[in-house]
Figure 1 (cartoon, helix red, strand yellow):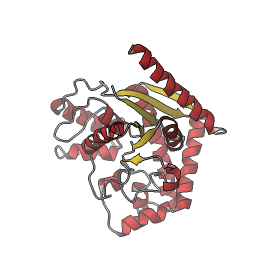
Figure 2 (cartoon, rainbow, N blue to C red):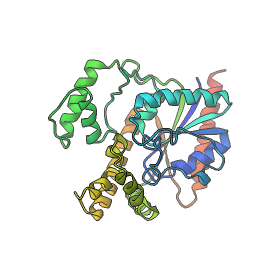
Figure 3 (cartoon, rainbow, N blue to C red):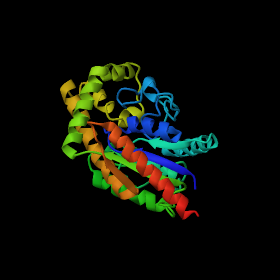
Figure 4 (cartoon, helix red, strand yellow):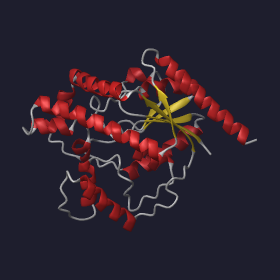
Length: 299
């Protein structure tokens, strides 16, 4: 099977930096696995990698569609698998980087997507996304805050329409790396990261979209965008919007941990923020060990 590396974890733990350093060591190419970073113009709020940070390492599936496009998991599955073949043909190793678990599983596992739609256990969906998905099938009066009913309804839809056989079978030889840190430290990182985004111009980035009348799935579901839209609509204050971004980011991190702990065979690494090279070296040695074990088993 073809070798694929996955680097995942919550926001702010160093996935981007690790991916570039690892790619340089193993002749890898980065494949975006963040559902928001496929969109052009959503840069600060998605913490998209800057050109100078790429260090000449090829990066794929970033900025591939307009913010008004309805880019689906079905689209990503096709694009990601095509990109995998292209990267391997170039003699390189694909390194998927991001925290969108559903995108990663759709690309790398034997998921059966029916009628260009995707259903799963819904751990990673926001309430707004759950409601939107239901409305794609039929009208509903379920309130957006009633998560239990939303999930129950989508499970009915899933069970009636989706073939989920072989859902856990990987299509590739996958090594899943998860970066983590203590919960309190993570929350501080997330809060500080949001403050930094504000300093770097997040409000202006979102205001430009708002003034252009951009109203799309990406804006309605993207953390950092939907909260500021509430502020621009006069529904909440700016301070309330910023605090809501932090809260939603922390809650999303919780859901990411749940997803990757239960859905994938993830090897977690505690990040050494004082000397990040230690983390890079630990991951690199683990990847080498996995490859050596595979070579022995294939003899």
